[in-house]
Image (cartoon, rainbow, N blue to C red):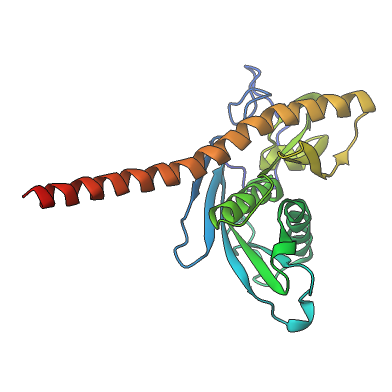
Length: 261
């Protein structure tokens, strides 16, 4: 998949054959890969490749709150730290967290917190560290998706997963899963997240121009795409435990053979 690394945009975001610049149809997702249990020293972790985005998420907790004054006596605290590596974008990013990183950290926390039973963990904290090692549009949605997956991998009680995606308008056409160049050069951008235990919207941001009818169409497009993303999350979790079960069965068979000998 081609990666646009400079702020130089073509006159049209569609090819002559009607496909988008990366070869996708208007309702087609970028290739998505998810895996859990990738950071061994974390309580839970996940890795996501979404198009050219490559993102790790690691979860630690429940553990003591630092600084102590942030602790709450009646519930746990969720803290999210979204960071972009200095080499994750074409123009080298400053190492210190910027305003955008702090904003996305807050957005991800607001999306995920309603899913957790924090009242079960008073006086403690859960910390989610998100590291973007390659960025190409939609990192806030991808980060929300992979952070929820990492929390589930940690075995933390959750009402459901949350999945997020950005839909938008480019060259007058409604498209699903905006790439980096489509996000910057398109006419409208609508990041949206859904919590699956109640199928309610937990994130809705908007930049650009659209009327109410278009908004409803965008929401329907997003919901259909998010069902596919949710299934990929579930498959990633399931594959881990299928692998554990297979390894356990092999070990059991090996021990039984030794016993017969």
